[in-house]
Amino acid sequence: MTTPIMGDGLPAPLLEMLGDEYQVFPWDTSEGSEALSTCLGVITYGHPGVDGSLMDRMPNLRVISNHGVGVDHIVVADAHDRRLPVGNTPGCLDDATADMTMALLMASARNVVIGDHFARGPEFTHYDPSILIGHEVTGSTLGIVGMGRIGKQVAKRARAFNMKILYHNRSRDEGAEEELGVAFRSLDDLLKESDFVALNCPLTEETTGLIGKAQFELMKPSATLINMARGPVVVTDDLYETLKTGRIRSAALDVTDPEPLPRDHSLLTLENLVIAPHLGSASHRTRQRMLEMTVQNLAAGLAGQSLPYPVLPK
Ligand code: DGY
Image (tube, rainbow, N blue to C red; front, side, top):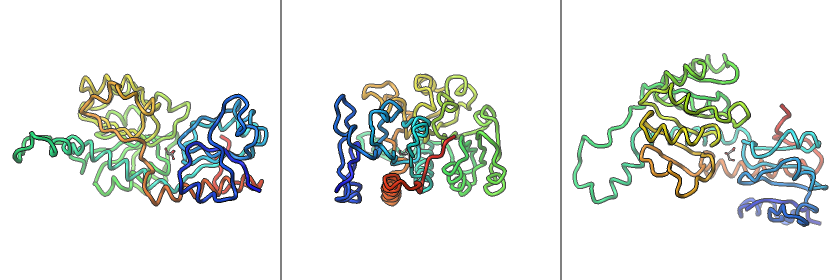
């Protein structure tokens, strides 16, 4: 007997891990969908939306297992109202996401992407010490918005660059201040003082639209914004205007709103933007662990056991 589950574009290694025990239905939310009437479990892979109305159309649903830590695409309160456990993959991706935060920060500061294009092109005919001069990372000020697990890993890396590290969080974290030498600031003060602002917070009601025109106005003209959180934390149109007019030096985005941006989106024309296709946790080791945790949550939920990595009610 196989257990029917629904999943969107599950990759071969995940299907292999699931093995013969499961029958995987493709994501189909249309009227009369066999997947909805049959499946006992859901794997959200690549952020398909799941809300109460979808849950209500799945009479046999026992568990929602999310591949990834961010669950903003799932209405978790709706799941808990229906006594459905939701699992995610916290912790295992902190290092990879912090590495990528630093990679984007460095790439933007030191013109790595634009330099790569230039070095491949016909205009690079001789070494010219006056081109593509960037912003020195060592010794500069980093403002981290969100001092959670990932934010703390970013702070650890920034210490090695001898950076002054500020942070803003819903609540002060005196443990982090002591351990990592980070200093708490209001969001406004963090924006005013930082050379680099790294967004490492979850997407919630409070963080949606957190960085828009008014916040960009506070930032240094030489500053760089790095968004490793979720696209909607930043107001896309305001970011475009800010970069276009040179109000801040640059931005580096792992996530956008919408994601992906339409191929002809004006942001994609800007040279002071470095952009990646949501690669925060995309290292082999981390992705392997995420798959394992996803399957463990699924199996526990199907067996009626507590999930090893549950998303708890707020
Ligand atoms: C996460 O873990 O939230 C990543 O963004 C991948 O979903």
